[in-house]
Image 1 (cartoon, rainbow, N blue to C red):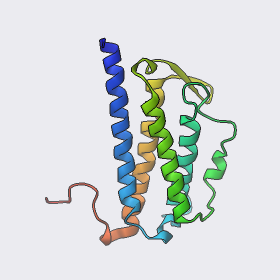
Image 2: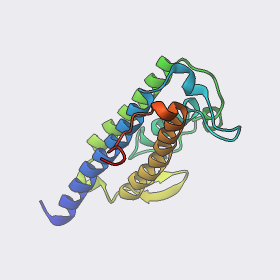
Image 3: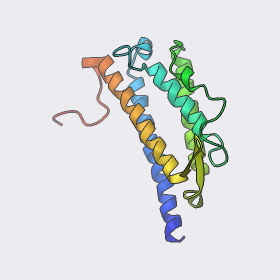
Length: 168
């Protein structure tokens, strides 16, 4: 394999690992929480876990469906609705969560090293596949950080760390 293809292959493998790591952090956070925690916010301007899950799901389904052939902002996406509290049951929220991540991983696994420099569009703006993936790494990292922060806040002294505990 020539060097650009090797780099493309490594980039795709690393992207899958990074997304998987993010998902695991959020999964481990949500597993510590009570059902009621999914609807709580820190203040009126903050998002609940329900909102974050709905938004990430909407984004994932829009961005990663027909990734190489259609704009990443699908016309049927109701982005504003993702930010409305519906009090969906936890089981439904987790179903949306898994469905979104499955779409991400399914799409990433379908890409080839030769796809990395292809052009895709998000809201009419041209991106290389590499740039589009990096955009989503940043976006999902931001929201997973919010999920972990909120979970840690809600659990307070009952929080079980997701990394190396302090002073160990």
